Image 1 (cartoon, rainbow, N blue to C red):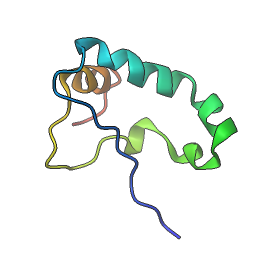
Image 2: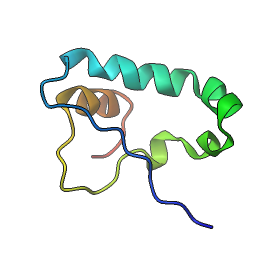
Image 3: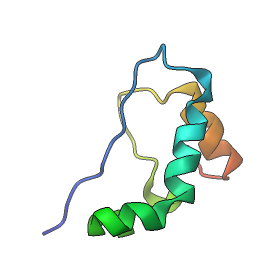
Length: 70
């Protein structure tokens, strides 16, 4: 069964250091996989999706630093 994307949602008022949360998630992917095998699919290549919900500036900063096209 193909699953849809996982989406992290936060308030537009969230701290501008939100990029640190994304960095921690990607830096510790092995820990995520250890608790949930579906985390194997978690990758920069599929992290950005087309959505009507705008990306938080911290998320934009993180993905640009990683060279991910937005």
